[in-house]
Length: 119
Image (cartoon, rainbow, N blue to C red):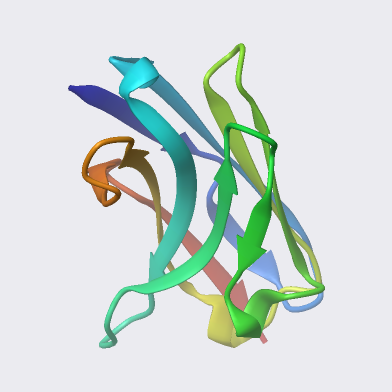
């Protein structure tokens, strides 16, 4: 099993910035990528950003491109989400997830951290 713990959420004004962190522990060697997802109030969970441990390739959801940046420290098993130019529609619970190397699915999830952007 892989355990994930998010931190760094909070309340910020529109146009502001936040950095989320996710620390992974346990069988992290069985994962090949990590990602951030979010669930806005009353909506489905959606993909935000991902990073592959091998090669460090990153990918983003269309609505955060140019504003959010994902980065990771493989040695520390930690991934970050740097969020700039935040908008009220970015308000959501943000979840960290780890992709299992064998299944190819995001099988491991953190409990989430609330991000609220005020207008």
